[in-house]
Amino acid sequence: MFIAFEGIDGCGKSTLLQYIAERLRAAGRDPLCVREPGSTPLGERVRDALLDPATGELTAWTEVCLFTACRAEMVSTQIRPALDMGRDVLLDRYFYSTLAYQSYGAGADLEATRQLQLEAVGGLLPDLVLLPDLTVKTADGRRSGGDDRMEAKGPEFLQRVRLGFLDLAAGDADRWCVLDGDAPPADVAAAGWDAVSAKI
Ligand code: TYD
Image 1 (cartoon, rainbow, N blue to C red):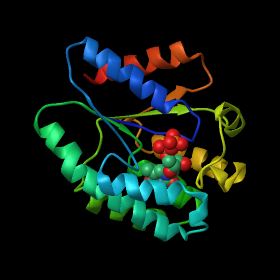
Image 2 (cartoon, rainbow, N blue to C red):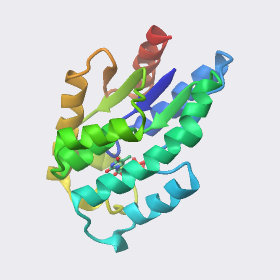
Image 3 (cartoon, rainbow, N blue to C red):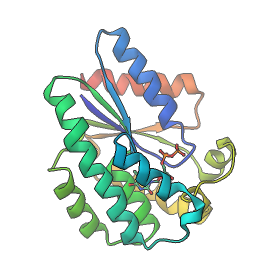
């Protein structure tokens, strides 16, 4: 199983990922948990640059290229080898984040961005995408600490991102499962696990 977790900042996807990982371990499986950007030496360094407010404004295509470069590296060095060994992979953000943030959010051409993603990952699509969805206002209230460079883009930007994720989900409904991110965490976790079990 290759499962991607998507959603706006503060939606609860990382908590959900940890829960699904625990359930899979309890079932005797050995999931690889990785995050984007990050999880490779290059990815962690580029992540620091992308999230550091000191980096300042970047064009949408600069961001597309940086996120996508990390992703290409991660797919070939971590995800494909793990899948080839028969392990499950749980991925905290995949290329749908680039489509939602850089295309729907920041205006990079959607079809060109999508084509680039498919090239960069060699066409590797997840079996399931879990999307805890909730309002930008609720998500904002949940985040603690200062905003990183991406989070500082503001509520209108994040609203475009949120609608982008919902549009991507609607266009590929067999692969995506939209969860009510406003529900109590235990209910989000249970609904997420139901979706995973159904795919297994
Ligand atoms: P995330 O891992 O959610 O950050 P956090 O450590 O705060 O949980 O993601 C980092 C940020 O990068 C987030 O605001 C979303 C953004 N992002 C993109 O804009 N495009 C992408 O392709 C990816 C993977 C992330």
